[in-house]
Each structure stands twice: as structure tokens, then as C-alpha cells.
Length: 315
Image (cartoon, rainbow, N blue to C red; front, side):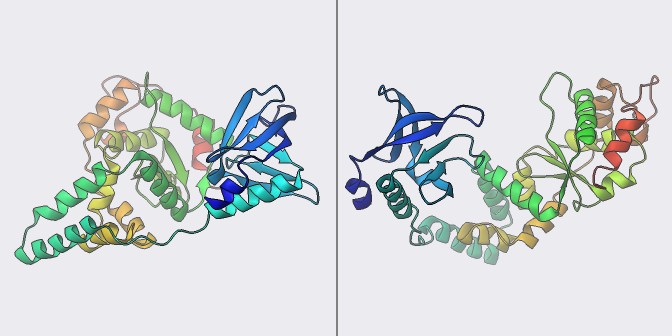
């Protein structure tokens, strides 16, 4: 890149902070092939920052402050005017919008094949396509889609007391293993939802219709044992019609309304017998499942913790 070659030998003094509580440290800043190299005055390598990720988070008449992460945990203060100009020039060149790529040929061929398959009445092709998309979706993509859906569902509800209560309930339901990620979102609706990354979502309407913490535990156990958190990406795709799946291949994810509708309609069967086993292992009553307890069980949560969960979306 011409802009980078122009400044490849440029060095300047800067002040680097490794973390928010660390003191400012005088350092030497220089350009690498695709990085900004930060070294001590004794030529000890301290950090390499990707130029493509570099962003200015503050500036005044004499200095600019840079970071490479959203939380700005690590920062670099530059006062040298030429180095500031160089960073801005190179960053602008690296972040220039790229021309939109044409749709890959394989996607077009698959879509055309689907049209032919529909005309021939081949019912298995759409399911094969959904399975292929789900199995090839990386975790980072599933997480990004989950974040998008969670944002569209509404405000996430969280309080210290509710988080503590949920942690107590989760420790009962998932003993000896990492608990399922569970969040409260005000507009999630009357049923427990499973996001593409496996996170369970509980909405205000659901928590308000449950009379006891044992009933909430039963809802979670039903979702867990019915496989709601297993391959949730595939279940989301099952809620999309064939044309929306084809749209994914050609254009990316369908519109938000289609995604939300698919999320709410994702199929989740119930297996009360397996859910009851999970509750018994957690020493929680199975009465909310309509199954009589074999022996008396302790309360799933104390009254104060339950009240905190019921009112988590009130604040």
C-alpha cells in the first residue's frame, strides 16, 4: 500500500497505557507491515496493534488518543504531529470501503438448483440446505446474529439482585457444569426462546405468568431436555420459508421481522419425563410439570430472590 510505504520508517515517542489502572509509559511507536509497533525505550517489544483496527477515541489541539478495542482497555497517546498524520492517513486507506463482491457462483447454482427442485417437487432439498447452512455457521456468526435478535426483542433486564437469584437457580439446575446462558429481555414474549448461540431468553410475559420459582425452573428444564439449546441455528432456519433461506444464500440474512418470526416459531418439543429427572437431580419440585414429587423438596429460591426475578424488568 502506497500510504504505508510512505511512512514505513517513521518513528515517534508516545505514551502507552497497558490497562486502565496502569501508569502511562513512555514508548517508541513505529510502523510495521500491517501493524503499529510499540516498544520500550530499551527496544523491548510491548505490543503490536493492527492498523486496520486502530481508532482515535479522543483528541485536542496537540494530542490524539488511540485504542484498538471497544472497551479502550489499552491506549496510546501521540503528540507528534507527523505520526498523528501518518496514523490517520494509513487508517483511512485501510478502512476505505471495498467494492461489493458479486454473488459467488456456487450460491447462484444452489439457488437455481432449488428452483428446479421445487418445480420437481423435491421436498428434501430445502432441509438439506438448512442443515448445511447451520453446520457451517461459525460460533462468532451465531453470536453476532444472537446479539442482533436480542436487540430487536427489546430491552435487556438486569439487576444485581436478579442476577444473583438467577445464578443460585442455575447452580441448582446445572450442578458441576457450566450453566446455560440465560438472559431476561422485556419484549421476548410468553415463551422461553433459544437464540442461535444457545442462550435462553426469558421475557416479561413469561416471568409474570409463573407463580413460583419452581415453575421457572420447570420451564428451563423443559427447554433444556427438549433440545431447545441443541443446534438452535438449525431450529431458527426451520422457521424460515424456502425463499428466505434462498435469500440468505444470495443476500445474507433476511430482514429483522422474518428473523424474529422464525425465532418465535422455532419448533421445541417438550419431554416432561426428562425435565422431571433434571429437576429431581437439582432437588427441585416437579409439581409444576404436573408430576407428583416422590419426596418433599426444598424451595428452589427464597422469597426475596423470587421477588427480585419477578421484578427484574420493572426497573
